Image (cartoon, rainbow, N blue to C red; front, side, top):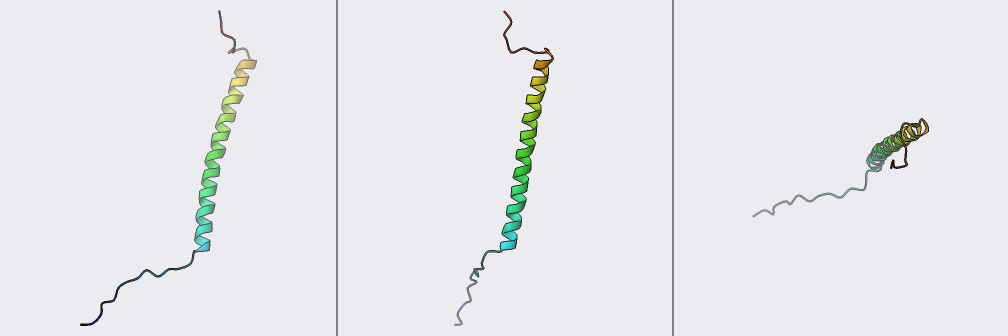
Length: 63
């Protein structure tokens, strides 16, 4: 009886271009989300201080 061939996975080295591309895309996406969050927080603070400066709100509790 003839021996059966077993398919073995061939190990290849890392694909540097693919890994760098994936890292770059993930880094840019994460950085973009972080910047959007940061801009949103700045907008909230700017709005708060503008309202405070224009006496539309107060941080002192009314009695």
